[in-house]
Image (cartoon, rainbow, N blue to C red; front, top):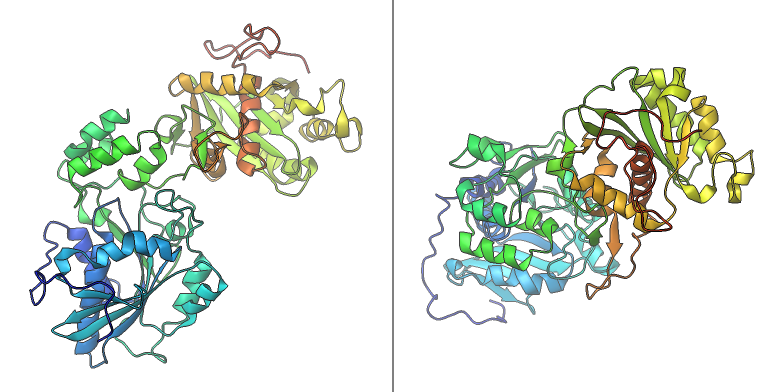
Length: 538
């Protein structure tokens, strides 16, 4: 037996560990799936998402032990080798090591080799051996090539809680999968497992697992005080399932990766109500982390303060895609530069419904118009192209001047983005957006102050715009939490989408502060009336 770095508590020595998941049915299913594949033995990639303190890591540890039992019963030698991977070894020391030392295992897990190896012993026999390391550099990445039966990634998504990190890459995951094969080390099943708090929705683990988005909770009523503190609306699904989410809502198979299945541990299945309330108090100024770590929802990991303050997915997005109303104006906001961008909306049923956020990287306005904007209009609002002078209301980046007096690169008529837009549309009503950022910021605040005035339809053309408004468009902060600038972080596709969105709002008629005298801008506004007359001449 290797020399131990941490001595076993004599009070735990030679005691029997009894671990029950009777009150955690989702974790119980997770354990059995690690053991032998569970209901889907053909899917060895196993993704487990959950909130803080709800037993994901403990579930993996028990699952690895149960897998070793089945492995040995099938006639294969012990111990079963695993690799345990996280972003940095510091993360292992700060979080994972404490889980191995949890008293519920009665000292069964033992750490050696300066905490780089964790081994589980049963009656003196080693059942599981886990090599622990972080993916800090190429040398560590090369360790993913070691022969193994099991792979375990702990918190592969970027974290803003313990250490600064970009997370663990999908390349590391794919490399690890190649190290598992019956030709190397024989076994009955080769599980590849992740355990993690909810990641950003476009993180590779969430995309690979492709689970459901609906909230899953064990004891909904225990979260009422949290929702009140965070001023969040009470989800209707809580009323549908007051005893907690049914098991079938918490587990499933991926539709994007044929070898993957997923589990979502219901929020509140294990962590206490008092612990959760304490965490909410600590994270009161980080709603993104409350959402991911406590309420059990994927979302944007904010790198700074949200620019579109007041925007929430609950109040300002909708899964309902309403067709554009024929014969009514369509509003467009354009941002120029290396990533030309266009945001499109129409006023419907007392709301400005945003239909699309289109952009093209590394190209020009001609390509954006030819490949995205005019095809979109032709499909969803063809009357705009037939009569743009009546139905196309265009707001744009004022840095390039106006249609009558262009400046900078726009003065070159052959390359003028404004002229290109007009030519491709066949006309339109054009108006520059505000020059000064405080005015654009004021327009944003006014728009989201009015509940459900702006509704972004959550569809294939708006995914990145929603991410931008939800926090990817942000004010950069220093490591100490101080704002680095009063202007949003640039360059970024999310800032381009955000700028185009503000030009759209301005063109629609949302008033901001007067740029010169602090007085309201003199504009005709559609904000409080159903008046669709143009507010300026082309």
